[in-house]
Length: 161
Image (cartoon, rainbow, N blue to C red):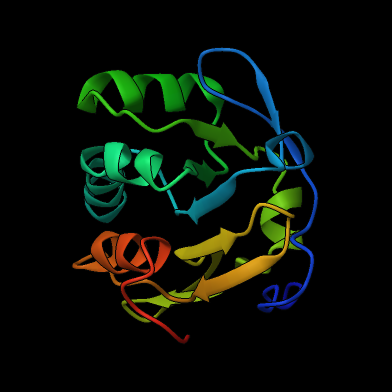
């Protein structure tokens, strides 16, 4: 099993990852902004596409709340760029091709599907405050209604974990 998920109140693990379209993104460079990291298994799969589209549809509201959103998977930059273009995504996608960040965030581990066991990314969302401290973690996310819940949390409309 991988590293445990970061807990609220802990410093979020630092990272620098390449972003589709060019630049690298470092968590430390985002200080002063709240950050949502949504870890997802694979580009162009139904659940991942729906989640990315819902974050895109709500990107303006997250921006108004001062929150930066990033999707992270092990897909290559080329796959991310194709995914973004195909679905007109409006959220940046970061490539963790080596899986180091997924390991440090505790989202890489054993999964079971239709009786098959394999290693993969467990759909997880992490909300990080402006100082780099984990505010909230959503584990084993179900896509339906998830983005609305994350948005309500960043807007202060819900409390607790």
